[in-house]
Amino acid sequence: MAKEGIHPNYREILFVDMSNGFKFVTRSCANTKEMGKTDDGRELPLFKLDTTSESHPFYTGTQKSVDNMGGRVEKFRNRFGKTTGAASK
Image (cartoon, rainbow, N blue to C red; front, side, top):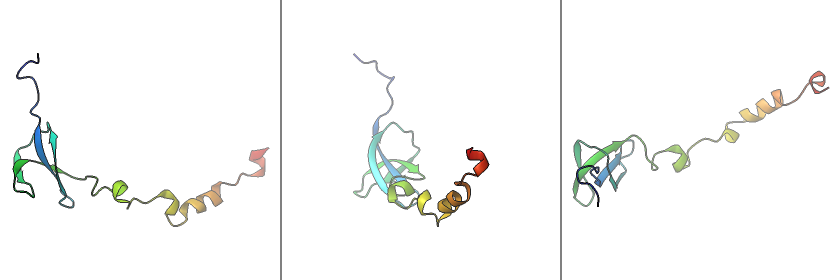
């Protein structure tokens, strides 16, 4: 039997991405002070996020790879990739 009064308040919370306005509802124990409306009109506790999978460059595919940075990797390899004759002996 579980003790009463020791468990966190696990409930539905509206999470909002502040960078693009993306909203989603999930269950959480996060403490909130504000309330927000969902698209279907429900009033739920509101938790504001700086970034989510909808705005993070890794998940949106806008993250720049080191390989396609204008040939900088190739310039580095050409400059420092070759060993001198004295160092290889």
